[in-house]
Image 1 (cartoon, rainbow, N blue to C red):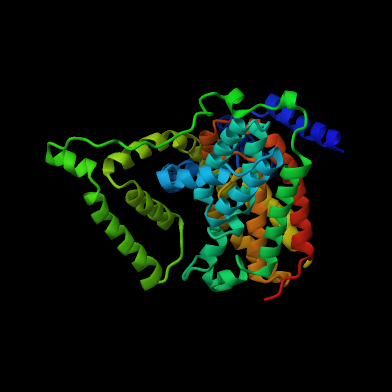
Image 2 (tube, rainbow, N blue to C red):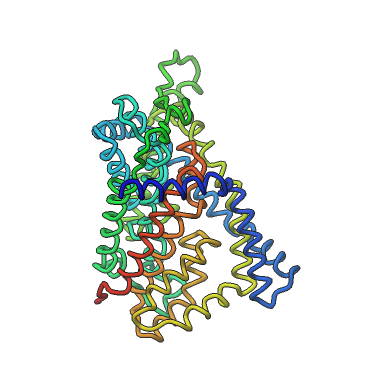
Length: 456
């Protein structure tokens, strides 16, 4: 059995190494695929498709900046001395290859469930630290497989505390409020329908990466030091050091007092946001929260600046690739390709099959528009009425959307860009393993959405 599993995963890993290009190239290929699909299945002409692509190209600029800040501030937060001590302490506990892989899944799952942005950086740093600690203990592990184990729990982020769609429909005056009203997170994120399937998914990932899929042939395992010696060096954000202060500008830069005063302003606004007006967490507030934490944890502006400068290179992939995905978004939206594909799938739906079919449809669209929040704006106008026509509760439709959109992330590098940057990997290095999880979790998703009872 172990040999068959090894051959199965090795097959997909070897295939990915040979055929899967860089994530930027994938963005270019998907652009061409979206163009061809629109040309075949919509009345739009070639010129119109290009115009649609151009109209969408810059629509995710704000989201790109938000994601860049998530990566930079999340990385800076995860590399604060206190966070690095916590990560190092947790990653030093495993004493076998199996426990290393299980720790990667469990810790990454916690990070992604709490917040997807923080989880991206946290999971990557966990992977590196676990690999370094395993090397010190003489535990033979494969770094690429370890990163696949830490990346796969990204699947659960939308089911967690930062899920875009459930947070949006729980917000007053959201764009579909007239059709569905306000749906509290007790009916989505914290509903047993979601919690049971999310827990089952995490358990499945633990079993897969901890006990079924681990590579057995040590000659094919590559440690972090063998993969890239630079990655094996423990990164420590060192203090700037005491400096003989001679000028007012140096006093402001190398002492924490200015940071603490502004930090109090940050804390005051967060108190107002959460406790005075009772608003929920969103991506802007998340970045605001991360900035608050790093301002307080680093103290002096000099230390904060050093950490942010070290974090910034991790955001290059986001800056380059997101406009191309926005262009794909434009093709899907403005040519009517989304409606065409959706009409085919919904025509075959029944009351019992609709949640699973909606999730599969969402997953397909997610491959071209990998954005949980903006894609909900496109899909909700046809998913909600279709579900209502079949007698499906609106909250159940939202949950189906949550699961379907995230499954495809396991084989689509859009969100993996910051994770890869921190880990020092390409998507092809671990997609062979996450592809196997994609199949297993897909089957579990379909069965769970179909047979787990949903009651309000």
